[in-house]
Image (cartoon, rainbow, N blue to C red):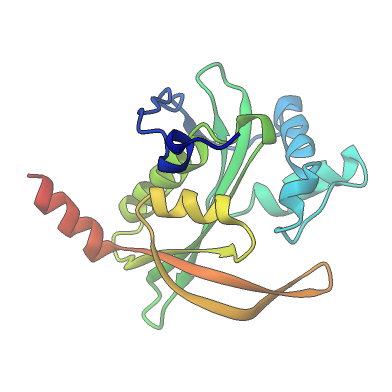
Length: 198
């Protein structure tokens, strides 16, 4: 039954616990990292928005780890303090005409039972900070979120990324053209925020 109080909304504050501390570390060939990759890739809800689906076999996951993850310039496991792998995050620097990276593309995923806890936001913040530290010439970190994935859009916005534009038919996923929203975090914006805080 709708009451006047319901229509006006509840003005009580909701206090959520802070996100658990996380660490980002390179993947290795351990059984736990292989198991983590298999579990992440089995997430049907996230796979809707990703190029890669579930692994056909454990051997497929091992090949992916050796062929794609380990040689990648910046592919990290998102881990809880107890070492559990709960997600992955990657940065791929783009090389400009002078050979220095000026932009980097960011991608991430978090296991379903660890979503809505701030883990993805913290991982994006940490990876973005690492990108600007590791590649001093970097001017921007960018990421795309599917227009039908508001959770990923919120992650990027909470991490300080600015929404730039909708890119129509930007990528093909599972045979379907998808519209995405481009987000960016600019080096100059980060510098301005640091200056304002001091």
